[in-house]
Length: 332
View (cartoon, rainbow, N blue to C red):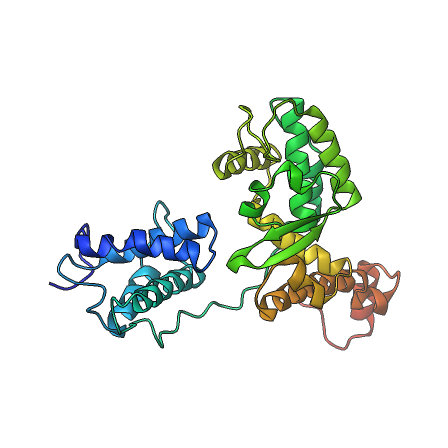
């Protein structure tokens, strides 16, 4: 029986490996709990894809390639959309981590992911959220209570000003921002970085914290005074976007927009990578390109070739002049 049967459970031996893999990922690599949860889900999905009689240590690179092709040609879970090449590359990355751990633990001497290249991501142009839409999000009062209104506006302002990732934002404590001019973060891969708390952010934080009456150390809280969860925040942002009839609004969209706006506002390429916590220079280069494209469009709109050519001549006058002097008869 070949791997890939629908609904088949993996042999328990494969699933029994996961607790050890999770512990190793947490201790030796310093991954965040959210990343470890995602790695666990992706490796578990791979093991479920394999037949019950197939060990993850008895397959070759061809089976890995077949699995990646399966991911690319099937819909994401709970979605009507196909998985993107970027998502499939994340699956491959997590499988590599699993097999690296298994090799170090002496469970296998063969890594079937070695030499496998993930699907190439098309060079798509980054489309940031329109600045006018961000301004609406920052100015419209939305929330059940004055505290929630102040919190929502402070969160959106911080996302757009600093470009924090969702996990970085929601894991902040009061102590991280009180009486400080910057926030120290530990992002992906355990990389530490700092982002400034600007005066506008400080003003919004002070207004929000002055309304807090709970004792929670969390910076952002829900209506029960507990740390704000990713699900609760996603729901708030979705309701606000629907109220304003805005599309494409998300936490990651605000991060993309923050990076593009930072370039437009003069942040140097060399600092962009440090502020946003990217590992590769190529990632920062994409945002520099996106910002350059948007600025070029704005400049082109202001410096129309037709306007420069005709000046204040009305279009109708230009057409009449062309008909008068052209030897070609106008088509009726």
